Amino acid sequence: MFIGIIAFFAGCASSQRVSENDEAVERIIGLWEVKAIHNSDESGYKVIPSGMFKMIFPDGKFMNFMSTEKGAIITVDGTYRLSGDLYTEEIENSFNKSQKGKDNPLNIKMTHRNFMYLRWFQPIDEFGVAQNRWIEEIWQRVRIEDLEVSNVDLRQELRQLLDNEEVIKNVVK
Image 1 (tube, one colour):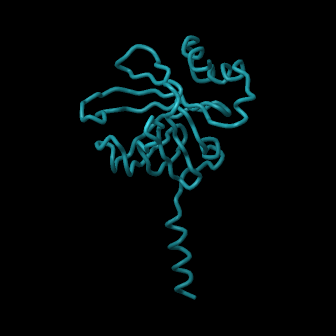
Image 2 (image 1 turned 30 degrees about the vertical axis):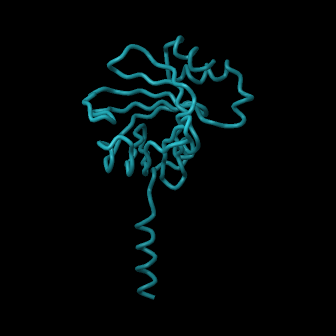
Image 3 (image 1 turned 45 degrees about the vertical axis):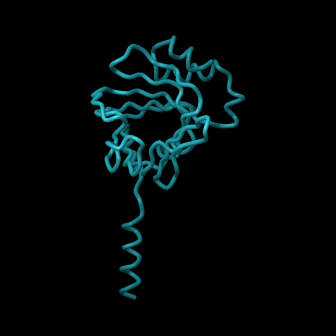
């Protein structure tokens, strides 16, 4: 019986705690596509062509991948934690070798359903060049039902995250 109790507590200790708030985690789980990026050392947001995705799994794992002419590639993966407005990616593998094995804390804001805003600091890029800049990303949830959502509704959601009407217009085409 003593061995059974030890095994039970060992199993509980090894379960991964993603967040104190299960409801907040439920909101981020799913497939996301990046729509716009702003680097603090450049002016304005850049609209991103389709094909860059983030998959957030309920078991505490995440994966970023992109589609290319030669096929899909995983650009970064690992585990994540969510605590309030801080979403932290613990990077296991990355095409940016300087990120491998490190935590990447990202500020997160969400609309009620379709958009996620992430802001993070990039000290070094994938080529080893010092950047020391903030990066802001606008992600849109990928869902079949999004085909039914009007652009007016999407604009209203984005207004919860952004003040710049020009960026909103470019993201929601």
